[in-house]
Length: 254
Image (cartoon, rainbow, N blue to C red; front, side):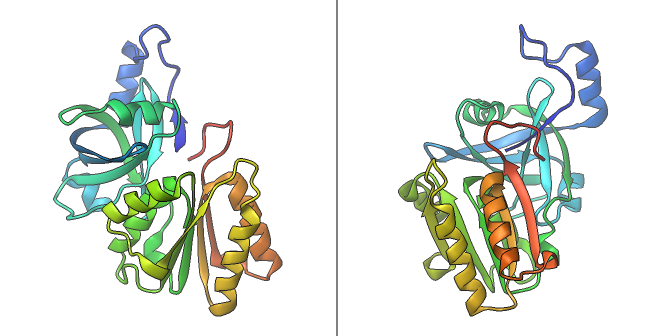
């Protein structure tokens, strides 16, 4: 998940001091956690009541930043199911012992959190069709957000690299993402040797649909490999929307 640090955290307590609290109040708004639903060992479906103003300005593909540890904020992609006024829904991937994973693992209904946004990130409402959306577990919410565009999932294919095929299939089933030939899952290998397989799959789709647009999200190293392969095939930059959500050993992506 992406990361924004507003100010150093008080090390002994992991909470902002007086000045930090004032900054939070100045730059954020308060949201309440309405529901937390585990979708598997490493995925949480979290519903926030962020107020009608937040949902009124939300557009598919927007980002929402949440202060998850003191003044440390992490970025999520909100989506909606029923779009009740003020309600924004998130998916949290519990990746290791990172601050966002710790927050999502322990947060309970009734808790409050400080948020920034929603703000523009990947403008899904501007996409033509056909489109291929590539990502990983951190991109499932973006795929759900596409359902709120005028054409929903029509003309869209999904390819995800994932750590656990069975677990990811179960999560996607619970989220009611389209199944069948609209989604391909590729198991991630630690050495990155699966990336040429993903590139080959994307190029096969390009051969079948010459006008295909691409939304590439997820792990920065994978996106570099795929972007290079597509550009070598002659895909113009105007047909690529690329957003790295995370990179190995790094924080600060947004």
